[in-house]
Image (cartoon, rainbow, N blue to C red; front, side):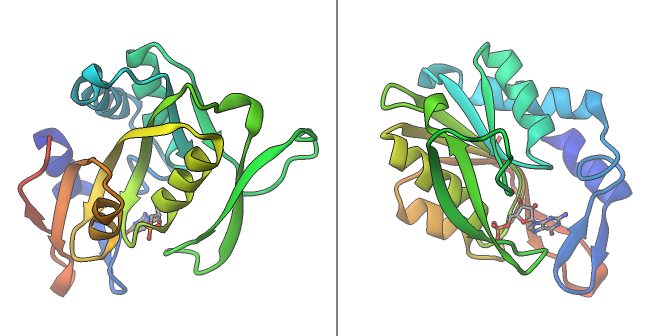
Length: 193
Ligand code: 5GP
């Protein structure tokens, strides 16, 4: 997505540990109009998959996921990282190691929101080593739901996430693919969509 690539070039900051900071338009301050166009793009790409739910993980996946869900006219569910006191019902759970925070957290979704009838589009802001997406896939598998696609805003293609998910037979579409963050420079690959 050309607009996204241009925005990363303009406002993204490379941190020395292979992390791209996009807190002025995605992960902290949010450019809602750009995120709406991102959500619509995901909806277009997966339009023929019969998606019934969009699933993401809190916090930064929520905004693009809700716009994708709005465009697809289906509900959006975000997996929680901390168990809420109001979540008394049965849960689907898995554990996810966070690349940026370097901690493992339990993620969960209420069983009542995902069933064997569902066809799920998973959305997240970044794909690095694939742990967040894999955790969400596991929640879908526990529910018996089908994962019909994975939409990623920024894929760091020099990390192992895409290979891990492709080995699981999953279809991944990334709107910006980064080949390298070496020498504080962002080098892009051809994007999927
Ligand atoms: P993975 O689970 O694929 O290793 O990492 C994906 C998760 O880590 C995303 O949900 C995102 O929150 C975070 N993440 C991974 N790499 C980056 C990065 O370069 N920049 C930012 N801002 N977040 C990242």
